[in-house]
Image (cartoon, rainbow, N blue to C red; front, top):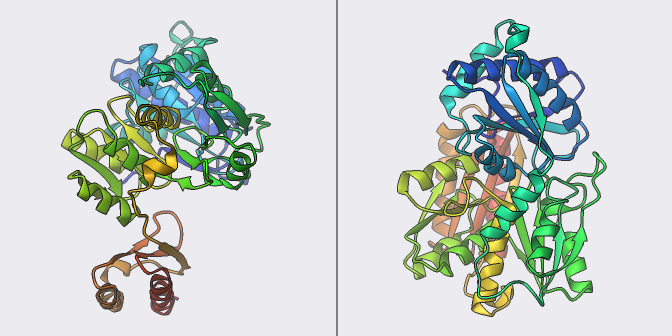
Length: 442
């Protein structure tokens, strides 16, 4: 059965303009509550990021769960990975995050975690969707759920993050620029690094409900780069709006994305790493660098859910997306920007090297990505002209590059990506393929 409402990362859509209404959110809370109650569960924990619509979502979900007889724990603005952790801490049966992650403020969405801090199963999602199609039936008054606000949630999560940092010394002497994207990490990340001894220069810590991810954070690093250089900081760290992504900037201004951070975590791990997981978009330079270290590498579809599935199937610990979702399953159950950056800081301390020195052995291949707008994506995978063209391009690259064509799952786009050693060559080849896509699908 195909899911109608859930994507690979929960439910997400634009708020207003008739796309998401408060009554739908209330009904979703009721439907989810009805399903988890059927499985003998009775409590949920709800957190959110800083976008203005979160207040509306939170109240509607709270009412929906209570009407189904489910107790609700409210923690306010907290990073997505914090909800995965706190759901376990408070022994709740499910965790809910109200967030659209790296999207603009006018988007919002809902992510679901199980009692173990993992994303809920497809089976539960389908049960919720089935219940959503029915009519709301409120339980009798004596069976209504109760709501409780948790005041010390941030402090608990700060202590948990700090507990994952293991190095020869604390961070005394380090000057770090932190960009919290005016999002959910704004009141958490600075405290974590300050309490570990670092001098912290704060950016993106003044959320107003509308400025989340706006010209800041992991999706826009220009201001962070400038601040690192102008303040002579050792490095910069940027999170996205809900704190599950991280990007870093070295003292020289070099950007380290999820690929680079995964390289550091794998190569400088205290215990030998058998293998790591990336995605179809992972740079070929990482794959080659890991091969030199005899570390296995596996690619999945784009999406941290697929990375997680591949890690669990192989009993591996480390995986990442280029966008900055970094999974360290020996530390936590989901992608956590703060914890991932703390692991990198521990490597810097233990190796007594800068980020630039640590990343130097990894050669990043030039990469060109062209998004081609099309009217109809159907038949893309069966198109013989494209297959032949890709084979021709790969032959011209003489085995020193990689070609990826894929249709967007959410937009009328076909993405053309080529990476290789010769930047000029791959630019020309990518443009050639993009023109063919336009011809075939216009």
